[in-house]
Length: 356
Ligand SMILES: [Zn+2]
Ligand SMILES: [Zn+2]
Image (tube, rainbow, N blue to C red; front, side):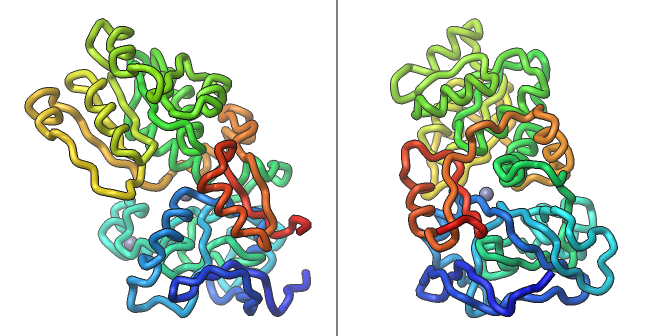
């Protein structure tokens, strides 16, 4: 396959300035793989990074530009020396973090907390997938995709892997009433993974009714809208006045934290996944003295890509209608605006091959 000398890429340069430009197509060096990008999802994290783009330039080693995007997949078009696990023509995805394999976390199997924190598309290194081509650097964790997996599924592997990890953190079991707060792309991925653990009951909360309808279609036992209903009272009423066993926070809104601490039972498990724009304050007495809660965090999707790929392919993880919008790279600005504020949007995707 002919690799063109230049490619279209959405770049971020100091300023910060986001723009679509033509830059030299990267080539695969030793231990690297060059991918022709099929699609790249826009994450809430990408939208937030653009709003607070100063964060992109906080590293002394950052290059003069950066390409965002960590929800990508594509086809191998060039392999560097030493690559044997994949071949040209394979459809592949790389986990969103490229571990250093040398730090204490990497050496003990906790590669997702690698001290280098080399997540594609952030902080300038490595470049992400909002371009026609991208490099999977040496050390990347690469997985193969079925040749016939639709784009609408493949582009969800990254967020769904994060969702599965979060749900695994909760250790939800068959006796548990689980409240899942947030039915965006991540929350819907969590719902699918949660269903497979077969808890007693799954209650999904969101302030958008269309998302609640989707959650219902994806198997939620109950849905409630906190903007319209006294959800904490309702959850207590369903649980003999005790509250839910597990609360998963996947909205990134401070009210959702407060709401969770209110409706969770004593000795319950609270899992935080959301990313917040501002600091959250709450009464920590509830966590300790009053309820003796387990409060857990969740980051990325370690050891989750393989099962998620398999479960998406077999239909065990529902994904219908999660991708709501597709744009070519040229319309990136509209795509970001849609992801940020279109009330119909769940997952907005950039597709480099799409007709402008
Ligand atoms: Zn993301
Ligand atoms: Zn490391």
